[in-house]
Length: 458
Image (cartoon, rainbow, N blue to C red):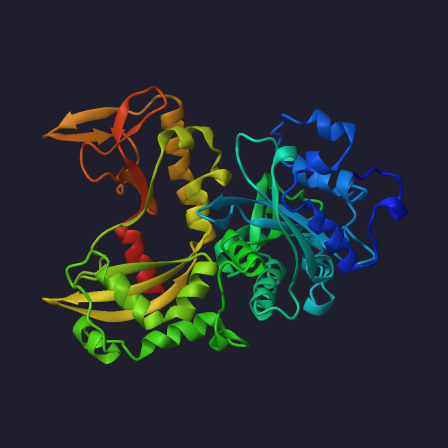
């Protein structure tokens, strides 16, 4: 057991990464309650207070001082400590959430400090990371959650180094250009600028910029899954050589150029494939075949969602774009910045556009897209209206012409997004907080808004 009696009694060499790792690996298959004798840990035996796992791990197992020092947790070894929960299902580990690294110092970046990658504070703090991962079970207190995966992770020299560097440079460039308030996590691939609550950076730190919300550099949840897969060797993950030292967006867009103007039949012949044209996901399958496995893997790890748009002859999309249906009870209890819709409009998209002409469908173009800042504010208004209606029991359902209508915002009420039914039929329903049933609902991007997006891109 570990006591806070000074570094010489801790059981590891605080200057050596290998020694720290060996000591950390003793945690595997144990809990903090098993391996620490601190009264505070025992006191929290039944507590599920969020965040205490990481604090107790630092203080009571490694004997580290918890402070606001901006350097790595193990200073002498230049090693950062990160803990995170994982789900364990069907013999595999699944990432529970993104891993926050360090808060973005807007002032330093805007005033042109810490903007060289090799000398950056980000790399100084996070190049070497000791991951301690535990099995997340909601009903189990944090100090009793079993630790299942412990290992080192490095940025420099990794397969993902160039992609992470490009992400970091993109974020820094946007802040330097005075657009810190416009940042969204979906603009980058692996390293995101994640929101840290709804609090704005005080004006004294950003006197020349609009009020930006606090953000931190963070590995996206989908990239954390890649780290888990590699450390646990449960799945071989590779981006392929084509993305090394090259802009992934350009590489992927170039894959589609030779198919521009071809019908779907002509694309199938060129790819030497035969697909089921009656399948609902037919156009999605065509796009996947053009992408190839390496590009599909990269989009998945970067949490970039591929969306198919079919344009009618007048240039308007055949349909609005849907997001998964929401549960009313969850919408009522969430805040905007922790809602599913917030995460959905902040993520990156890869649009594949087809054009309908008569009885034939032609491939038109592709483009990467992130919802602009002002449009995200409009999406927030739609979500807030929905949240307020549900929470105040203000949802009204009217039966007319054998159909149910409600008072959520429709496509004519807003220029960006609306709420509409998402269920398959009348028996596919959701339950409001007051117990009333309502057909499943979801957020949708307006067809006219999609037409504008397509016209402005690609």
